[in-house]
Length: 410
Ligand SMILES: Cc1cc2nc3c(=O)[nH]c(=O)nc-3n(C[C@H](O)[C@H](O)[C@H](O)COP(=O)(O)OP(=O)(O)OC[C@H]3O[C@@H](n4cnc5c(N)ncnc54)[C@H](O)[C@@H]3O)c2cc1C
Image (tube, rainbow, N blue to C red; front, top):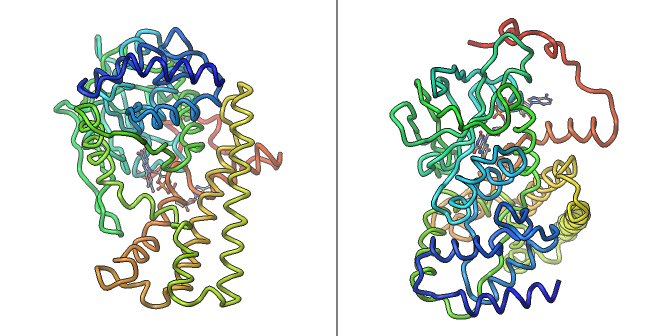
C-alpha cells in the first residue's frame, strides 16, 4: 500500500494546479483513478481494496488538495449504479457525480410508505420513449438543490408489492417536479416534500430492470446504513487558489441546511469538557453515565472496524450496517442523557444565553432524527433479529397478494 500512496503523492506534484476549477481538478483525479480508487478500473477507479479508500483520502488531504464531493451522489447513487448498471448510465453519470457537476437526492419515502417502503404508491407508466411519474415523496434531503433523484415508483400493480417496483433516475429540474421545504422541530429545514405531477423520466434512465427496483433499493439502503456520519480527512498545507475557493463554497452551501447534523449524533465529544466546566465531573451518577457512553462508543468503533475488514475481503455491505446504525442511535441517546444531567433545566433554553449558545437544546431536538433516518431503530432490530439471530420473520400476510388488492390508506 505504501508504494501506491507514494505513486499518488508523485502524481499530485505533477497534476495539482490550484488555479484549476474544482471540476477540472476533480476530473483529473477521476481520470487518474484517484477520486474513487476502490471502483473497478473500467469505471474510473483503480480496483484497490476497500481499505485503500481512507488511506487515499487522507493522502489527498495531507497533500492539501480537494477530494471528491460528499453526499447522496457519491455515497448512494454511484455505488448503486456501479452495482446494477446499465453501462450507459455508468458512462454518462458516474464521472459528473465524482466531479460534483451532478447533485443527487433520494426519492424513496412517501407519506404512506417509510418503514414499509415496498408499500409505495408513486406510479410510473410507460409512454413512448419516456415514463410518466405521478405521486408524492417526503423527507427528501437536499431535493431543492438536486439535479437528479434516485426514484422508486410502482410500475406494476398486479404483482405482490416487492415485485412491482422500478428504480428510476429522475431529472429534478422539470415542470412536473415541485419541491416544498419542511420545517423541523429544531428550526432547520433540511427536508422537502416532492410532488410529482406527470414528471418525465427518459426510458433509458432505469437502474436495473423494470420490476426489479426492490433488489436495487436494497443496495442503496445497505450503503446508507453503513455510512459513518461526517467522516472526512482534514486538509493540511496551503488552502488557496480557485479549486479550493470553489471546494469551500461547495462545502458551505451543502452543509448549510445540515449544520445541525453534528447535534443529531448527540455530541459525545463535548460531554467530558462540559462535565468539568459545570463542576459535575466528580458526581458518581454523571461519571457512570459517561463511562457507559464511552464504552458504547468503543464497541461501535470495533464493530465498524470488523465490518470494514469484511468489506476489504470483498463482502458486500450486509446486516452489520444495521448494527452500526443502531449503535449510532444508542450513542446519540446516551450522550443526550448525559447532556441533560449536566445542563439541568437550562438545557431547555435556546439562544445566546443558553448553554453553548443553544447547542445543548439543539442536541435534544435533533437526536430523534438519527433514530429514524435511513430506517428506524425498530426496523434495524427486525433486520438483526431475522438475519443475524435467525428469529422467525414478521408475519407477512401481503407477501403474495397483488398490490392492487392490498388494503391501504388512500
Ligand atoms: C434526518 C432524516 C433524513 C431523511 N432523508 C431522507 C431522504 O433523503 N430520502 C428519503 O426517501 N427519506 C428520507 N428520510 C425518511 C426516512 O427514511 C423515514 O422517515 C423512515 O424510513 C421512517 O419512515 P416513516 O417516517 O414513514 O415512519 P413509519 O414507517 O410510519 O414508522 C412509525 C413508527 O412505527 C415503527 N414501525 C414501523 N414499522 C414497524 C415494524 N415493522 N416493526 C416495528 N416497528 C415499526 C417505526 O419504527 C416508527 O417508530 C429521512 C428521515 C430523517 C429523519
